[in-house]
Length: 220
Image (cartoon, rainbow, N blue to C red; front, side, top):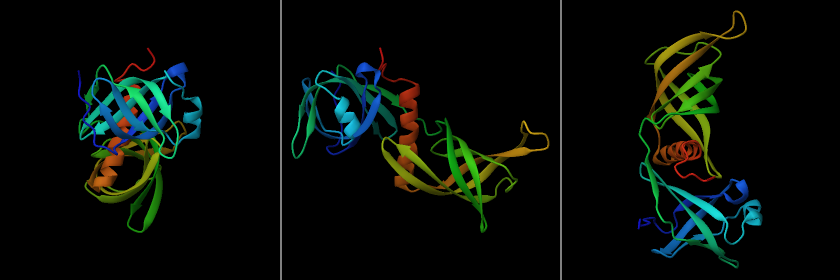
């Protein structure tokens, strides 16, 4: 039997998979009785709660340093009151995937890029915890130049602004479908991310991987 090792109060992501609803919401870990039950706070999302019933299949996912962990369970009971909570069946196993430091995922995130006192709007097309690929409509800077970035990432229902310093590692000029119009791809490396910003970036990467790599075959 796999042992659940989660700090009490840790935020987890719950995914309701019964009926292929695939709703997601954040919950907090309360505790467990190994081999029998897991207790989490009830989601605050009213849509999630309205769809949730006893015996529903549910997936719980969470981060542990650089690992993505998750398990499938079933709702055994729903206790309503001042401190509502869910009683879940203890999982048969816990799936684990190592989140590599350079894990890069495709995204489409609007970004403000500052070079000097000028702000340019662009798009981040892929993202890792160490860097990103930017698309900009104008030539902005050269290799080894520093730039400032401002963008938002989301993990579950939580959203956070990232304000980062980065260095340009490579630049590529590419034609678009419009004759005479080009765009510029900038491969960048983050130089300064706070602990909280890094957590949100990793959480966003984790969420993408959990959905697309299917560490738990949620719909089987």
